[in-house]
Image (cartoon, rainbow, N blue to C red):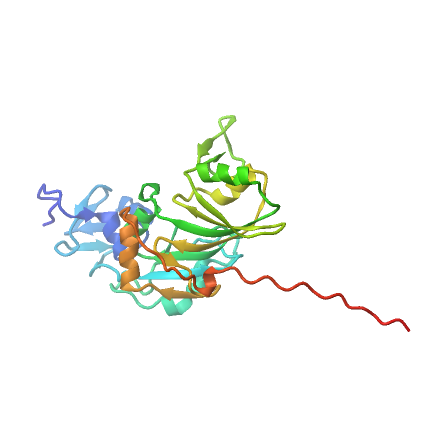
Length: 301
């Protein structure tokens, strides 16, 4: 008999157990529970608050017994432009899951998961590129995504036109932007929010300069909105840092994180200070600008 049925609140919520076993995401697991497809010790459970112990209780989904938690995996992906940060896209655009392919999708622990169910941590929009975390560790993903954790995220941002020093200083202090989708209007008024202070340094001058921007939050299309507020369109975005991680794989490639890197992510999720590499890998650097083309002169005859 489960600890929950004995009146002891020990154990974990069923939707979390199903997610850890690789059955579905937590949200999808809630639907499975509500549909009466889950049994705990022979009894159908339909209440979302129900807790159980995967090591002691017999938990079945659609009649199949769970045998344990899914192996937890963590990947760094360098997302190119033109990919969406979703598992499936109704518009049939390329997704980040296609980048990982079969090499990362090795058989998981537990008979219900022939393939790992990996989920992106945070998002990069269709036109943005760079460092993206993919994992099946729902607890860590949730902690990293909470604004209260203050996990540092660093980007290289190219803008159209050169902002003034006063405009950049306004972004550093925090600036009012639209909440939610761009230009979204709710109840007849624009919903506005003040961004947290940001670290911003210019890393390349020119008519369309590049800036290195470090944020502690990740609102919807935040960087684009911030620069739009000071009158400059964002042309390119590449995320190069997340917590202690620094982008070190080429576009479209991925690698599995080391145990030490996973520990550093957990420290960052707990609000603890973490250190990054001092020397940036090639993938996190700006490419050197091409030399100006020499004009060709035709010899008069």
